Length: 218
Image (cartoon, rainbow, N blue to C red; front, side, top):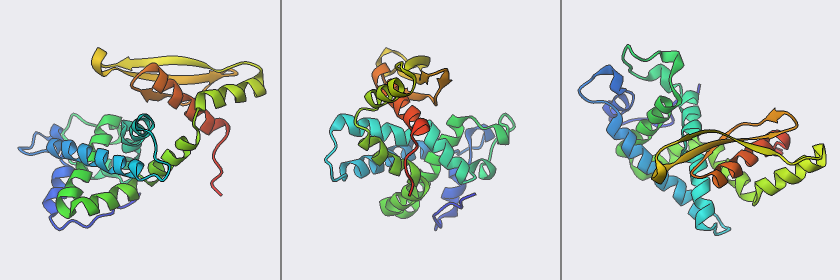
């Protein structure tokens, strides 16, 4: 378990960030979640804007989504052991936290770090706890067209293109999200969310490529 990489001057901020609304406490971490979400958006956008390749806006939007979505934030929360540190009510089982709760805990802690130490501390916290996710944006960037790359790979290995299955869709018409998985040769690869089917299929193709051709870590 990775310790929280920030020493709080105001310990009460840390405790508030870890206080889930299920406790029924007078003050909980929902406002800090809101703040942390905005701070993470800014830090991720700044990271992508500073890329020396001058990434186009559309690609930056997709790459940002890969960092700030629930799955990577929930995984970061798990690495930090936030489910063990959190103050929760009887309605939540500590070892069966929904992904959304874990992601919200991460955002709340980030918000608390920002209030305690400013943007520099928040930057250090985010890059320490989401290092893999920030590095992953470089890998995705290098795969300019993952759907085409996956199709060529599948044709070469199995003589047939991949298929894409829509597993879930959420939200209303103006804020829709789709969960899609790529399938090939009887295998279903990890699914990915997107704001439309095209974006979701692109991310699903990238997830499949990570399985079929894992990046060289040196």
